[in-house]
Image 1 (cartoon, rainbow, N blue to C red):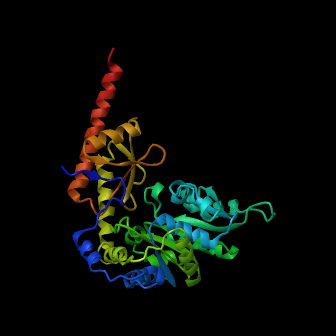
Image 2 (tube, one colour):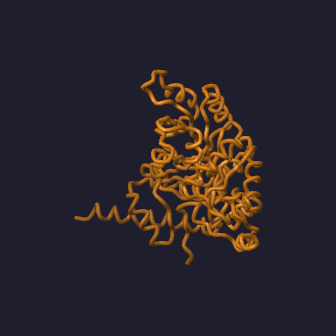
Image 3 (cartoon, helix red, strand yellow):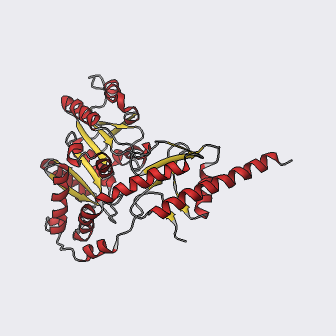
Length: 354
């Protein structure tokens, strides 16, 4: 029986059609700016997000770090959401690469009070405080179960930053999901931001790659930083071709990921608390209504062929993607409910045994 891997939307593999596109890719030396397929991808993504220029990078983490490096200096401060990817999952890179200080605050967990939270976070003007240079937001938000940052809130933050001369960077690893879910174009979401990073290797199913977009000046400097960090990858067209194929053929399929996430959440809601009901995009955070250890549940689910990942606090995470179909969605929910029933019965027997 095929394993059902819901750990992340990064576990997808290229389809046969994507592999054919990779094999046909026209390539050149990207460090010299001569890879036509990579150039096409960068122009395409810049156009989709309404920005002057774009840069193909190996990963979302590199894209985020380049955005910080070209917009803030050593010792500067950047305000970020305390639950953001850039805080939890980028191995302390801001302190090493751009040498900035992150100031984590509950920014996107209180989206209706977002401006109040930012106003309260402002530093006085005294020299001994770090200089605030910018704000980073995440859309959609991984640790908030794929939550979408409302466009009107994003515009307010962009205006707040512009009034103070701050940059606004969006970690848009799953911005495509926000766009598909709301019908708001990626360019509209990107407009309030000075830089945006989008991933090709998550919901879109490409094997590698992200793209950083912004002004021509910022992207020129980001290209220099990419080279310093070992990201000059030469004949990148074989990777860029996968991204172009994904944008053309896989983008509409995100709707199915969102639908399956909602169906999964509805199926398990009798025995599990769900972070959002229904989930806004493709990420379901859930936890049993009865106390069952997170690690134990993950281990037992693996034994039954279902992979999920630990989420924040005691939540578990199931992410729906190109590699999951309707039958697997139903089967994953059924297996989870059966496992919870067995674990609950076992716990009851143990408590009642003399």
